[in-house]
Image (cartoon, rainbow, N blue to C red; front, side, top):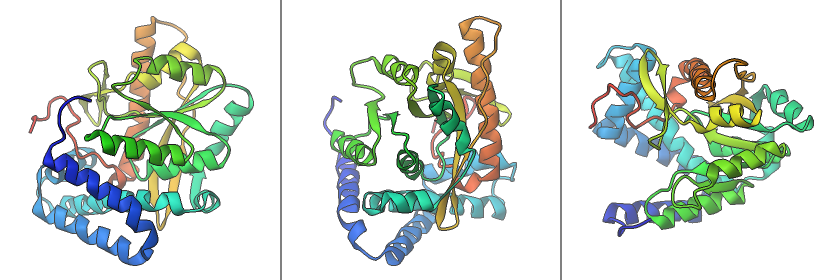
Length: 302
């Protein structure tokens, strides 16, 4: 990545470095309380990210803008978001067996059955709950996997995130700045009967597929539906959420690929079906949907 990191970039990177260095050695309850306190402070300041989350949650829930219910839901969303960061700083120090024990999973048989039959799996996830803990669970039950990570700024933060996820047992490919063969690598993994996990409700490229999502147009990544169409891998939506002090994962049934139509038509149909499943999961756990960015095409760019 080119360009000198800004002061803010360096501060954020230093904060993450301190988190991974210090938080595992501090008592869990006080640090969790501190992260919750920080979430409340950020929520009260109502900066651009908080206002965007509130706007996104209003569309998802239908709650009136400015209503007390929407305000409290946004506060819960920020607490969920900060809980994610508190947990990722602790995850490397948590025994894998404990992660597996504390993860309540619905639909795990959809993964196990396909892998046992030698068929690759593409797990598609919205940005919800603690997806890194979900990845640690997946590795812990015997399914190491490949994923793609956004190229964070500064580069030192991206490398630290990659080391963190590789330490949990993931293979991490860069979204940008790699060898340019991500799709081929992912296709190879699933053709060999492996597992791929990909975020799938926000397009970070310029090649996304337009879908209807909560009544308006947005673009989703082409990768998950295209992998299913091209390779025959099982495309399984997975909704990740917090379950009390533990974690929940709902692995949905496979999204079928249409038998008729062009490749482009099939990919578009699969993408829409995926968005439909995500709608239901997000509506059931809106406070755990960490979407602090612009998502819908009609929303103002602010």
